[in-house]
Length: 249
Ligand SMILES: C[S@@+](CC[C@H](N)C(=O)[O-])C[C@H]1O[C@@H](n2cnc3c(N)ncnc32)[C@H](O)[C@@H]1O
Image (cartoon, rainbow, N blue to C red; front, side, top):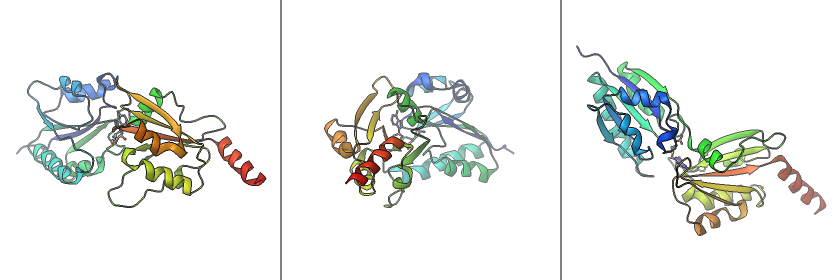
């Protein structure tokens, strides 16, 4: 009887081969089947064994549902054949990576699983933009949030973007106006600094600064494109100055 294989979810970083970890390279080298996401740097595939099968399963934004079923099927079939499946994901597999769905496929078969962390896009973007995600006495929390949800609901951005916070929005380009208008309608000052970081961690990285009040306009004028991270920083001192204006007004 064939024994059940192993599923390894591998974080491949933000899309440049030199941000791949040693562990990720080792696991790629020992896999029989590689299922590769769209934003993974193509150079990392060079670590694969010569006999490994490589399948590009890249999903464009919005077409994830149908393709995910196909990916799950590939995982199940290969595991049932006793193969080691490396699922190459951009950034870190546990951050907006649909990891649970794929892990469940393996667990249901009784397969071994392993997760290899990677550099998530927000961390690469913070380095590119030289943004400290926390700041003594000013920024006490750092959150990551999706700008796009599976249904039409608006994620609770307002409770995250509060005094003392830094928030990284993933998948935010098409939602720029909704983010700006929602936050400002709920009291966030238009003067808050924002930063778009396009292609973080790569040689073609671009950083674009603005304020919350011109967030959507900046994205449009500067033609910000996916993949991009949006940072909204709300230092405690900004909240204090809003309070002062209100009191004197
Ligand atoms: C489905 S999520 C995958 C996130 C990934 N698992 C991670 O940890 O970075 C895709 C989103 O991640 C962000 N992203 C991924 N790679 C990026 C990069 N190199 N630069 C900027 N943003 C990136 C973008 O917001 C993109 O729309």
